[in-house]
Image (cartoon, rainbow, N blue to C red; front, side, top):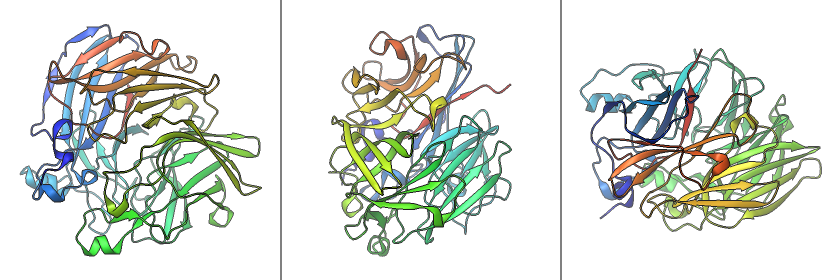
Length: 444
């Protein structure tokens, strides 16, 4: 039986490639000095195509190095988990794993405290990579990470600390952690939950940690049936959102019931007096029977949480299908004006049709459409200078060129959102559609 997550723009590539001095249309701004990183599932071997689950493919990291107006290199590398290393005939770069649970992370890749980290959720440890994307091995942050980690930590721009909420089906709690700029966990809080919920993302403000406890939970029936990802929509699990002071403990969480829904990704959150404002992409429901297909489309919503009154006001900001929300991350935890999403994402397994830019102050949006078949991925915002104003910078995204039959890194001036790209870096290969990425600026 055909599997849509092994076909078209999602089909895995079979080789690791290194190419220098990539061709560029337009001009790369000289101030862009660093690496654009993106990760996604790219199974090294599929034993049963009909049973393959997209979320479980071996992670492959893709990187484009920009410096002095040049695209110096492109590299793609599998993350060397034990299984991947063995299949490649290599020695596994050993490191601490959790109870022999080892996985090649496939969901997010970012730079923090001098480390390049490949990330995944559900109990597996992060993997460290070197500057050229070679695997250094799994890590537990110097022995300070008790369990697994998450794919969506949030860096507080005021402190440089990395906040995270992790989960694992074998736990009866979630784990909130703070990683310092020294690369070690300096705070950890266990937050009791029932039914083993999937918690893909969370939200962070200057005062609070916001936790989504929603109706996708561990399914023993799917596990006993041999499902690789035994999580599914659970009508019996109430939806609720928790608000915990950043310096508080589990007893300080204020839980508030909300209508059933699902959230993969937060755009941003901030404090508004005694209230908390959270912007996010919301699915009415998701993963019935554990399936990714046939779900209702996500919309861009705003939740205004009043922890004192115990109420959440939910409103739809834009009802068009969209996902993978991002902001200028210098404003993480603080009020933002602009947000960026992928249009028509969460509906078509072959990627989005374009990028959307939302102006929360004016209540307007723009849609930048790409050619049919481009499979547009998540956009990452990069400021033009460390002290530039919000939205003064560039959006970077990967898009497939159906004419050239290769993938491009498209660099867009965010203040000229629908204009011609500032630069288009032409990669020599197709990059399969993946999940998340980041800009890793040069250090020092």
